[in-house]
Amino acid sequence: MTREIKVEKRVLSRNDVVATRNRVGFTERGAYVVNMISSPGTGKTTILEATLGRIVEAGRSVAVIEGDVQTENDAVRVAATGVPVEAVVTGGACHLDATMVGKAWQRLEPSLPAALDILIVENVGNLVCPSAYDVGEDEKVALVSVTEGEDKPLKYPALFNAATTCLVTKVDLLPYLEFDVEELVKNARAVNPALNIFLLSAKSGEGMDEWVEYLIGKAKDNS
Amino acid sequence: MTREIKVEKRVLSRNDVVATRNRVGFTERGAYVVNMISSPGTGKTTILEATLGRIVEAGRSVAVIEGDVQTENDAVRVAATGVPVEAVVTGGACHLDATMVGKAWQRLEPSLPAALDILIVENVGNLVCPSAYDVGEDEKVALVSVTEGEDKPLKYPALFNAATTCLVTKVDLLPYLEFDVEELVKNARAVNPALNIFLLSAKSGEGMDEWVEYLIGKAKDNS
Image (cartoon, rainbow over all chains, first blue to last red; front, side, top):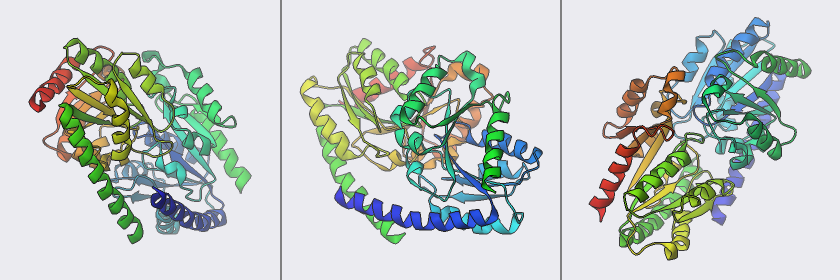
């Protein structure tokens, strides 16, 4: 067990060096960078599509790095919105690390405007491992859907601790579920009292404007 | 990268030795062992509760090893059914390994009947990492809910490849979703043509009898 932990520390510290290099590159372009993390099936890509449309409508520039264990399905979906996107297929790895994101950023850079407002990294679907890896982001965004349990923040505290913002997705389904949103919010704040929380539905549009305003506000602060 | 891969191989091969020892112990008791794996929020514990009730009604003996990253919430829910249960809190680790399960089995054994029909291991909520770890089970069961995407088997093929059975959960929600069950089944069989697939709802009871009959049939084959 000792050996495993030591190796994990070494891998993480090497990761931090590359993450800092990424952060310098992102800052040079003026981009505010979010790292979206959730379970598979929380609706990250659907929220992302709805978010991108609103950012572009607001006249701001945005690009995407799209992580998946296998397939470029999500990158193809994002590309259809017209926003510049680079896919990272991890081929089995359960998280994005700084090196993967740094390489995708190098491939992405030639297609970007001189000043980029927002870069969104969509991580591999996993509520555990990605939270340990800094990829150079300004903030981690945790997503949890109302079809999951209210106790997810208590059961997976590392992510909710590391995150600045939590998006509660698929709230249009609440009438059909026995799900207590207040209980979820209470549990999330118990883990991280400073968490920004938005209740969203990409389908009905509920909460989307507030979330995108927050994001654009951060981009302005950053530039 | 080479170093990481070598260490992973060494850890996995040590795991296989312990998994084999677990398997010997399980076989001595006559137990058929399933390792349930899914994303967080697929409804593993709710399906488990409904499954346990039906196994006990059928006059068969069953026990549970309940894995979570943090909290014993799920173990408390299972204990309320009256079935013997041992919790494994991994404290950050993103999967159950054979050593964790072996230790839980040692703690569980004194409370078990001489002949145990079925042991159910509920893994940590994670669609990626647990699929790489043999804990001594007879089969891995992959769960995916209809609130997730139809392409999950293509995006997370390692689990669907390693699994013998796939439970498609929360089918009671189908009327409220744009979800194509046939597409999911097609994708699952594209990854693993031999997969047994059950469509289930713990809420309505749909499919539960067929799934539990399958499980009890396996236990009989095994004893």
